[in-house]
Image 1 (cartoon, rainbow, N blue to C red):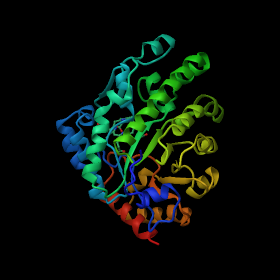
Image 2 (cartoon, rainbow, N blue to C red):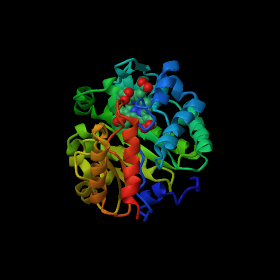
Image 3 (spheres, rainbow, N blue to C red):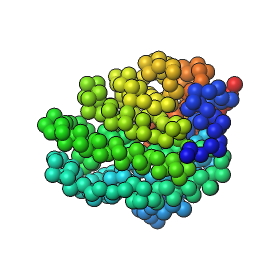
Image 4 (cartoon, rainbow, N blue to C red):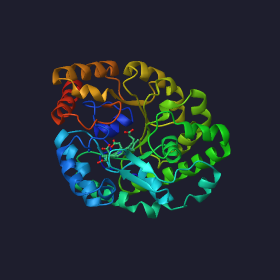
Length: 347
Ligand code: CP3
């Protein structure tokens, strides 16, 4: 059952394209390394360790809500956590980003993946969701999240971040049956995982397809869209789904076709043009360039105004960056951005 509290909060109302008093704003990676509090905790604990300590994960989730005055919290976790119980050797190594020690490159590797029950194995995430809801005390809604089937599959196949996704694409060129099997398996796990976060108290969910921008429209349609669509279709009814991707200005029609109540737009397309492309019968989220937060506050305000102008007071706009906050971002600039959104959008 979706949790009914806070249903009229501007963030959840905007997800449903209802009129709001001001444009709600939150940021991807709002709890990350650009914050001193987070860096202080990271000096003591590893990243995975923090994810697995629900009290600390809840504290990290709530801090930016208080500090930045954003309109939603996003649970402190990571899209790759779901890969760990598959037995592929997930490690957050210093400097290089996460690595998978035993990547999936063929049918045998796929058969070797461990089956697991997301209801049981990832209980530390659900515990963190519960503790965060208690700590937030209904001040703002809490967003749960997962990686989308394509982005998770490419991480699993490449074994790390990638520039060209050659291994992932080679798998669907040469062994499409293995590809389809893997994506189907991931889709089922992701759907269960998100629904468990919802059962624990998440009031909206975001699906991160951060790497979908590397795909041709035809490949997206054939190798990815059916799986993203099945995840979105399987989410507990009544809970808004935000479909996020980057570099997908040329794929927006297909992304829309996969479903979701809110479509994420990045800064490589103007918000008005992106919204017209996905259709005004769906909400949108975005789309300030994360690097714009390095500009002086006056320039940030000008760019916030531009995004809001392009949204044109249409119901169903959630302000966000086009991608996550970068680690060197000045916190006072983030605060200035949030204030500008609230002031300039007040109706
Ligand atoms: O948004 C939030 O504040 C919630 C937490 C969150 C994290 N990762 C914490 C994190 C979210 C929503 C994510 C999503 C995520 N993780 C994505 C999709 C979003 C995106 O940015 O495209 C991806 C691709 C990942 C995988 C991942 N996790 C990478 C590539 C890295 C290393 C690069 C980096 O930014 O550090 C991580 C590590 C990670 N995930 C950190 C955090 C706070 C940094 C870990 C540290 O403290 O060293």
